[in-house]
Image (cartoon, rainbow, N blue to C red; front, side, top):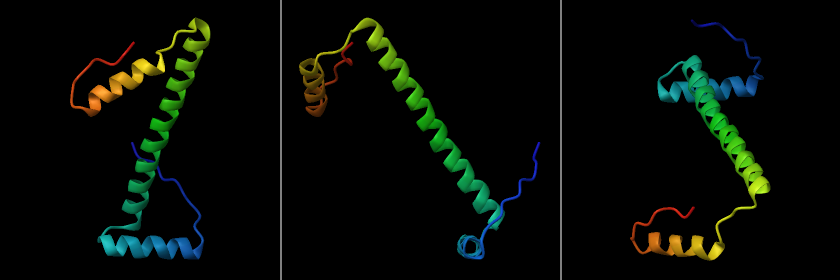
Length: 89
């Protein structure tokens, strides 16, 4: 189901939107919808990453377990040399 949402644009933004839409041979509606969907995808991914980071931080605070930097560097060096090693845990 689709619904209509109104957005108030100043004249300059409206003209920029029309110019881009004309250059793409698309409607301003298509440009707005595409831009909004791309923005939402990025923001949702960033929010999920933040939630994952917070969960990892909480696990670290609870357990104190971490991977030593030397082991991580060893793993990264192996990847850089083209060797496939499992991620350290």
